[in-house]
Image (cartoon, rainbow, N blue to C red; front, side, top):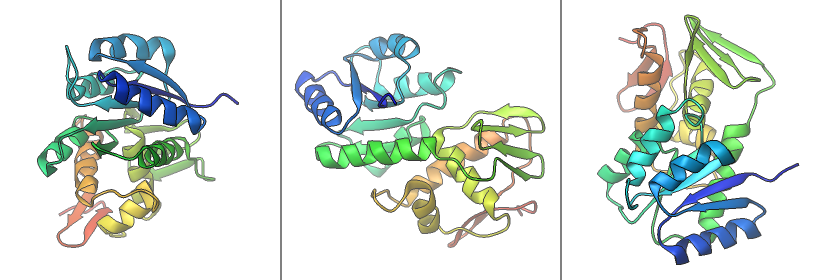
Length: 231
């Protein structure tokens, strides 16, 4: 079986080389692009399994690259890790809302990055023993990794897909942020609770894009639930 291909979009050659070396050592194949334009031109040809995108890039920023990848049909479900020196909460939320599935602040340890890559790939490839889950007009086909609402395709990132799968597993049950972090992100990688809020917003937007009713209920101070009665 071919090992996963990781696209590294990083304009600082020493950092790209270090990251590539450690991922290669961990058993992954790697591909390096030094600019946003180069990355966007290569993704459709090389079909990476995951992308690590630096925020600060020449020509086009990592945020722009992330948004473009999410806008393209062939890469809208590509797992993306945003890599940046920006550590402010507002910047992290911006990166997640642009389409990133995870966010790593420089400087980082190679071991942490490998763990995050492994965890994100595991989430994107995971399947349930139940091939289909329904809630109202929303259907998840777990074998095909597709979501439809009222017969129309709903395009989700791997993390949002797993988040929806978790919520649909127990309609009406209120999951705390920590509970969702544990089920969706796993316990082996540190992710801040606010990450859940950013992905819930993305999931809501995708589900309601064709005028559908909002079925995700926010329970102040408690968490989120999938519920026919959201008010």
